[in-house]
Length: 297
Image (tube, rainbow, N blue to C red; front, side):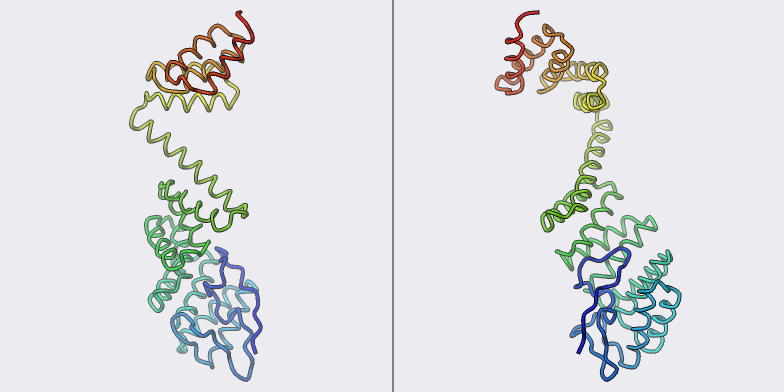
């Protein structure tokens, strides 16, 4: 009879028992007969080695990483060359910060069990730690193809895309996480971060393509308005209007600043320019109504 225990806290923390990070660590094995999962990744561990593996799991659980590494290595050397053992040994090295050694173990686990998703995810994290971003993206993309609904794989892939300066792809991964767990605050935060990176990327691209783009002036103006610097914002908006007189929204923003500063006549002029571009603009019509109600100044 076996009794399920909580999975080990790992770095990165895995969110699904389906990843089977520590196969026997999640089971209590009787002394009479070791019980194994029906389909252990990469092979079945010989019964004689299961106590050693269990001791390694307990050492890992207790944070005794050197001892855990020694025990898992013994299991491999004595005939326990299975994917999940190499995966656990990789976890130990990863927690020790020995990412190159960890990657070697994860690669061996993948070699023995190509469809075992856990080492793909963990190897991706170690590759990111070493700055090998493009390889991390490749490995983590493979992990998501093996386990499309595994949150950790999506999360790590999203982070890898941000590191690779591909924020739109990162946004898509974080949107998927929000879809499967809409109440998870961490995923909401990560999606917000991805959107922020996407915005920064877009501004950089606009600046690269056209440093005098009306949109670039508009974006910079919005930042100054957010910082309560209306004069600097207005100056940039006027440059945007010069760069593209037909760009919707610019004259309305100038009119709003003028209205807030009590310059009603200038605000009326800018509102009329906005309505000439977008006659049905609800915000422009609303501001015009407020200006008309205030009377001439």
